[in-house]
Image (cartoon, rainbow, N blue to C red; front, side, top):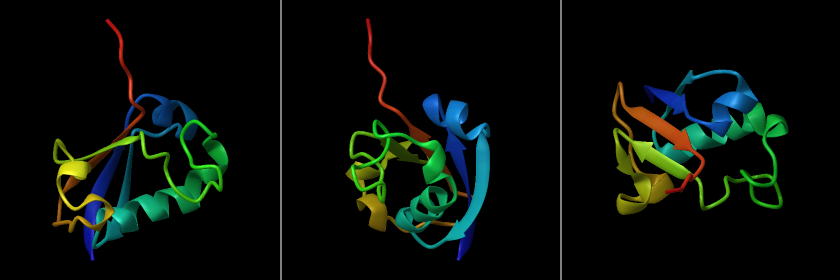
Length: 93
């Protein structure tokens, strides 16, 4: 297992009251699972799936600045010191 920082952005910071949380895991899924286990009571239906076990698929997860949907999604392997970012999708003009 490697240590990585989970950097929370926008609504995640407002709900959890933290900017960064350090976790250990082998994949992006390991880290997200730990985060949800620890903080799911602070997150609502716009962030979680209806069963509150997973993130809503619209949430954006970046690994070192790259969207994990262009990698291996939750199965993406992590390296020591990687930076994960969790964001609510925001748009505007």
